[in-house]
Image (cartoon, rainbow, N blue to C red; front, top):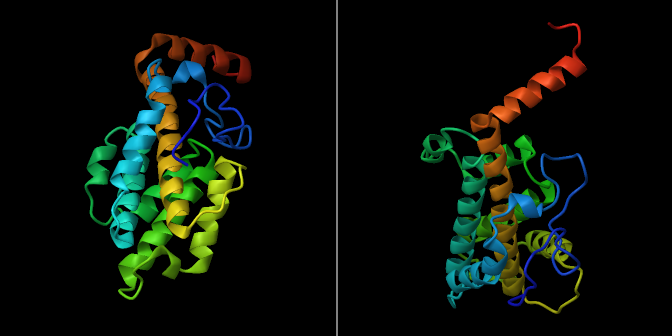
Length: 213
């Protein structure tokens, strides 16, 4: 999982980040919604994720992996919700609730948030049971869920350990959420700062609701 082809539009057969059309605000990567330099930085971001997950202790890897996912979900929501950072500081606003909020807003393909939830579930296996010391001791259904989501990213069949599945899923989910964060960020800027949006909305309302003057 350490080698990837840089993302294009569409991402191509190596890495799938798409969802059903019209189900979410963005359902695939759009080149014109991504920073020009990001394509050349993708591999560096993947390598950075792996560097954070290099501990020999599986419990530490699970906790750090969940933190990386939480940071990615926070970034996606911050790009869309004004004042989100105030919510983010609330200790009662758990990772589970953040994932559910992102899913409810339908900003990006929902299966990516399902992947984030799989990471959260595995983290909880370690957090709630001291007897769980390795990924192989996590609940089988959580590892299978992670495996299924990893296979959605890439159909390439590999023999991977439970740890490799977790690490790969964290890295690719963070990467995908970051890509969609750029899309949402640019949309938010356009809606809130560009007059062209307001004129376009006026024209849309005039066509869609002609009875309103």
